[in-house]
Image (cartoon, rainbow, N blue to C red; front, side, top):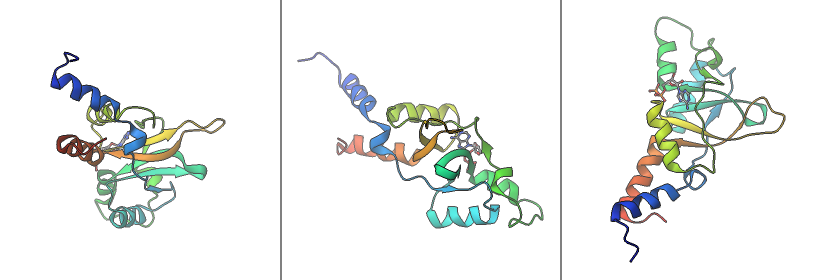
Length: 153
Ligand code: ADP
């Protein structure tokens, strides 16, 4: 008998969950995408956050529901406003690494009060990292349910 409490074992189990095993497909748009098209894209893809990328999937920003709501207030022409002017821009984006633990990602979501993190890989000679996935509060909830139901590996 290892002498470990159930809580210690659960903690060890949780810390072993890896971002690369839980990440979902990133949903992206470009800086030039209009606020109107970004809203349509969000609805069609059923996500709350779009990652804004340039050529090669290099991360340049993040646009959330509230960013789009804010820019939709007043009588503005949403077709003429590019996402680039309403998004949160690099280097102010909180990201995570595929090799990090899911617990690290959950802590970042809470500490930074955001709904989603881009999973990124550093790219030699590029101006920023490449987006390879997405971790959201839903990802964490899914993991929590699987842990509770004992179906997680
Ligand atoms: P919502 O605005 O829909 O509630 P969030 O709480 O995730 O969604 O976003 C709050 C603000 O933080 C927005 O301005 C958004 O652009 C920004 N944001 C979202 N995700 C990140 C992130 N991973 N890193 C930095 N800023 C982010």
